[in-house]
Image (cartoon, rainbow, N blue to C red; front, top):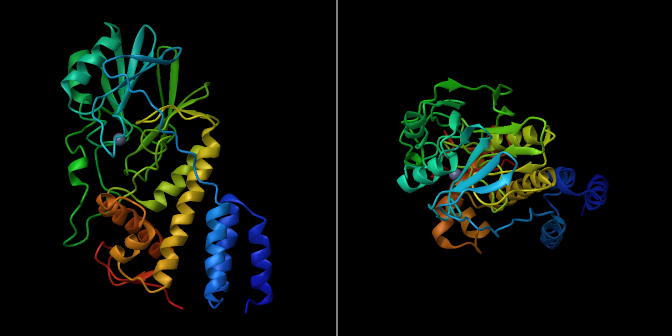
Length: 353
Ligand SMILES: [Zn+2]
């Protein structure tokens, strides 16, 4: 039976929503682990029904080969590199009027370079700004710099969020642009200014360790790279990515006034703060799902994936395993889950009752 305090938690949990609600649920789980299974099941289904899921928007017209005006002084060129991870392709942005900056030039793709050059239309390129060093975002930076004389601004070269463990293989190694070297290193809060615009760099690690978002000062607009996108959740996969970082980077965005985002893939996002809060709640829900599977005796990542992602295409299960690993890494760092040695894909996980 539930004790008095558990009932209080249950009562409070029902009247809270979103992150606060889940926080209360976290307390409830900790204090009601001996609750009858039926109750646990109904609580879980209550969570799923009450959870505010992000409303993903997948309507998007990439208009390959064109420059699409997004706002005065801002246009978008989408590269024709569609995939399950890039959606319809990578968005590059051209910012400014008489002289311009290019945000995320994109992958090594000659056709895309030609379209970008046409979008620039003979104007001087003053800056090339890179959100992060995945191969769909940064490799064109150096060719574009050589072509235009612009200098490259980014947080730093590609690096993983933590060192590789002994024997660990980085499943995402091929996705990192290890050749990338910016001319100017940016730190959190640094401002970059050009013709009629100032961008504030926000260090938002999680998707990659060097990921930066850029808030367009004195406007409603922000460039979140791959950290927040309207069409899907961001991939957070160790060792390149880190869930603890990703969650605190969501908080970083909530501290900025901008509410309209132009992401690295897919269409623009409006009411961004509500969406970011929903993303946060969504990850917290996933975290609780991982935690409860470990608690129920599923000690290995493939076992956890098979249950949590049972409705997901099996082709995505390897990626899902990395996402579960990201949650376990975070849960182990917070002392809520235990493992032998390093957190790894092949590790065994348990909770101490
Ligand atoms: Zn990307």
